[in-house]
Image (tube, rainbow, N blue to C red; front, side):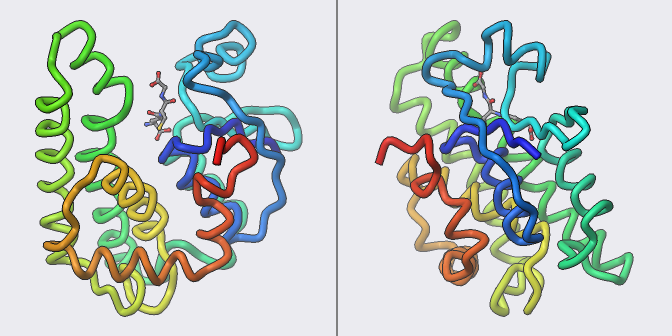
Length: 210
Ligand SMILES: N[C@@H](CCC(=O)N[C@@H](CS)C(=O)NCC(=O)O)C(=O)O
């Protein structure tokens, strides 16, 4: 399998964690967002939306959208599971993942921020206020709900961790003060001890400049 990825993309980071966690071998194909490679003809043929990640399967078919890719991985590589057995518990884990996937990331991602500072003429300070506002709304609720014992949903890694950890990386990049989020911080620290998360981290990607 080939994962079209960019080291700092949190949506690609989610998929890297899941692939590692499930022990699935893949080749990382870097798409440099800073050089606008995602808008080039070659990449648009792979992913017409021009977003990373995209996963090219062994039979050359392509899946886009991290949520769709993660669900496909879970269905096709069920062990180790990233969703609990009990259907209510699965609903809980999905609802935590969706706080990140639907209510934080789409509003705070790079193309939205670029639109704010470009077309709408927002300055850097206002951009930061916007960023912090939406991430805090999500993190405030996650902080109340997650178990953090030691991962979001207890002792097993779940989709909630897969979504949360990349969002914490983004929060730190944007200097969010994490003191109000001790449970989120502790889950993040615990996940970073695991090889699947460590290997998926932006600074450990082949296209990372550091
Ligand atoms: N909902 C999509 C979001 C993908 C997305 O926003 N990717 C970003 C990087 S995290 C991207 O490719 N941005 C390109 C751009 O800013 O033009 C998913 O989960 O895959």
